[in-house]
Image 1: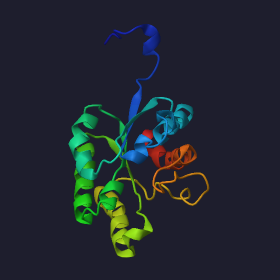
Image 2: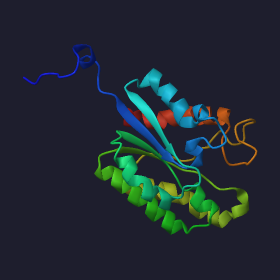
Image 3: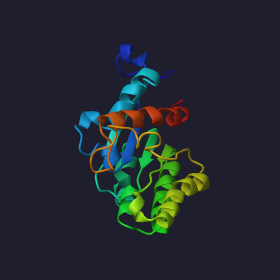
Length: 196
């Protein structure tokens, strides 16, 4: 019979699992204290509902899906059980070809799947001045990747949030502390099936 080589008191507790929030400035909590980013809010919610999980914030402001691919090995090295994947906004703001963004996201999702890491893909939209045609094409990226790769999708990170007072910073892009807390609350039902 295998022996537990750690103190007996610790053997009684299940091993802690890890959820990585892998994204850009929205995940990083740009313009806010680190303690007010949505991953911190999500960690607090999970402490109540899925206490064996801890959340790691791996958001970097300005990152595109190309940057995400470059950072992918460092995320895989963490050996997370699940990942929230929030990229694409900076691709859109820079006018990167929709097909390129879709290919990059597909590569990232495929790498996580190969490592048997569960994924929640998160969608985002663009400001209206980017034009209806480009925005429509851009928004289809996320549902297309989710459908093709058979991963769950939170269709819009700001769904039900963006138009509410006090939820978005003056730049019109990043959430306030209130907005971040609401993102975490809205995300939890999408995440829950992955964390069983």
